[in-house]
Image (cartoon, rainbow, N blue to C red; front, top):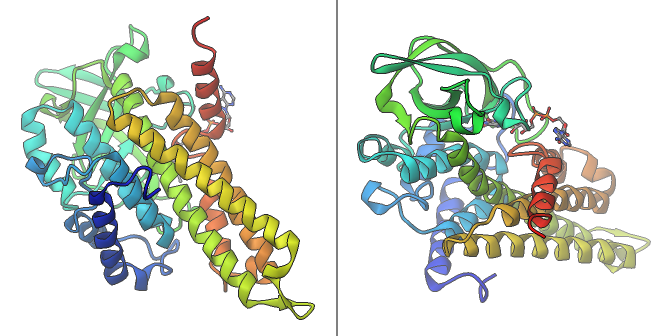
Length: 382
Ligand SMILES: Cc1cc2nc3c(=O)[nH]c(=O)nc-3n(C[C@H](O)[C@H](O)[C@H](O)COP(=O)(O)OP(=O)(O)OC[C@H]3O[C@@H](n4cnc5c(N)ncnc54)[C@H](O)[C@@H]3O)c2cc1C
């Protein structure tokens, strides 16, 4: 991507980032599992390094480096362990939302803490029966004086258990189409009535905190309403585009790591007195893996470039997400195949890559939903 999308500033950023990752993360990258999760202090280090702020202006402690830079950072962290990146993602998304839709007072109060990694974020949309159907959420926020009272429940929420700021989507006017009756609130973790649970483990992306939040008469000041009342469906759709590019970059980080692992293994291991890499059937796999990864990265960086030019990226972000997530699963599966029996053991990291990759056809909008969006956009007009 160097000569296509990266400017001098991106190359400098990447060199600085690689030094940071080798100092702070390389040694611990394989340690995460269901019992050893990503810590607040690790996220804080990433924030202090300047890697949570690429979409936040420098006025609020961000780096203002832009979306291409953000995708680059995401991909590089994900090459080491995507669970770290997935834990950072809600901070990126809430930071983006707050910067674009929040008022000055909210930005002054919260954005710097997010950018510096001092406060960890979560993005709370999904509910029972309202996953793909985002407009179907039932959580309610009823106005009461200068506050809103929130009741409802959210599931599958990343960073539950570690988050300081819960950004919660709720219906504020049930008499209108939810697309015009939804609002988003910043709720701080110790607010009375906000209860959290972590009742399950995850197949992949282990190390990521995930769980349920229950809201029982949670009183939130109107000052914590982000954007206009009733406007949060539209701001969420905008934020989803950034999420889709972020998750695509996470997929591409995994794919890249899997390809490198497969190439090394194929060169270093032999059967029939020849390295595996000398067999044509291995070469075809490597060729397909490399081509899919390149296509996925081109989709991501070309879409990020469109967004940096203020163009609509709804279709392109879904294309990137759909293609990158399907490619990641195929690439990681081929990497296991090239490793033979070793690939199916936890002595080799490729088995983790495949479990991690499986998440991305579900989280951030399923592949089916991405394909529906792409088809809807293609079929618009005449
Ligand atoms: C590890 C993890 C982390 C997550 N983190 C967060 C988070 O931080 N915040 C948050 O709000 N949510 C989060 N989610 C939720 C995630 O966004 C949803 O799981 C996802 O959008 C799918 O919703 P669902 O699970 O309710 O599945 P459903 O919507 O019930 O889908 C089930 C199946 O039906 C298909 N389907 C549904 N509708 C259609 C349709 N119209 N046409 C064709 N097929 C359809 C789907 O594609 C899928 O295959 C997370 C999920 C996971 C697993």
